[in-house]
Image 1 (cartoon, each protein chain N blue to C red):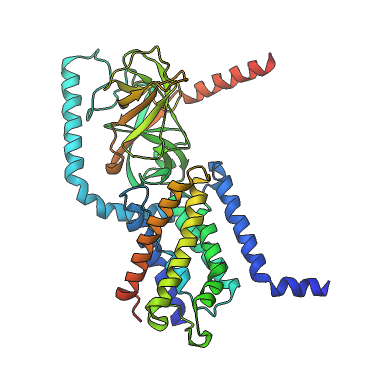
Image 2 (image 1 turned 30 degrees about the vertical axis):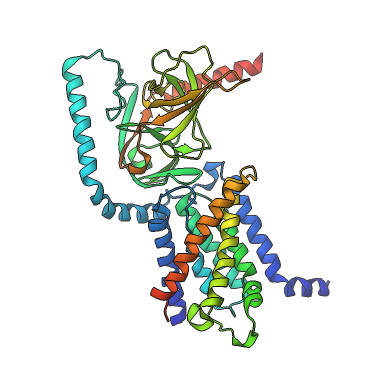
Length: 282
Length: 166
């Protein structure tokens, strides 16, 4: 027994190393389970306020561009408001991405991106709004030029989310012109492009076709612009197109975004639960 | 005690430079320099492992928290902290000549360059493979490791000429 202790004591460095590595790897493999590691991400107070104060300095350099974007969005909204109420709610590039048709269904919370990346295989966004502002997990994030991501972790005054540029999730989307459903996935290469999967060959495709959100999940409203078809081909021996989508959102220059709150989300979730229970019953 | 404060300042400034400046350089997915490992590299060589290992783990975890990559930096930094005595022993020709402080000034440019290359390469290799967690795109990940390592090594060696002169 004593010799065992002596052995452990002499090699404590190795055992300490193994223990710390196990802890680290445990954290790596549990990270998909976001709720468990509530405080160990960029939405915590320390990381959030560091990013926030740094961003409050750096954001001055982007003011001119942000102003121009806001002015353009205002102008678009105003002209739409005056001319045609029944216009479909999708606009082309650089236009307001979404105006709710039924204003009681969705609510928007304005937020600022205080940290963001585009060059990692899994990119995340940190926002300067948190629980006290009404942000909740599973809410969509959109900007004036298109979809941005989804909120995953919310703490008191900051929140973080997955950006579209994250291979860990995909967006339910459709072709605007005929409603064919597909899912949008980022391949980890270029921050300007993503792949659209599951569009079958019988759908007629053209370069420049607009891709919008399907509205089949409670995260995004229907019809928020995602991007346009940049290239496509029909791989031999398969049933679905290879489609490259040019994203309308410029992820390298994100500043102000809106968090989408679906006011009926509880009802939708309740219904989904009911359906699942019914299926299990049968 | 003064030494302790010095290391605290070094820790904070390196982490801040890493998360606020270098993590924001978004040239391409192939270029992700990580220079905060310099903190672990510059800890006194006589410092026992029961201090170095937890410190390295904590450093990695801090960067993880800021970049939402829980665990991968911690795993990589703990590993290089563990191999550090081995690395410094293997590249020192005369054991007695080696200074306790593993900076460039006391050990010379050549020694420090080797030291940096080995430490940074192991760190980046573990980091990028854990991040992508597949050997499928081995070549692509290898390019990322080599290019990012070269960039990190350049910045770390340069920092020895500019900031950490004493």
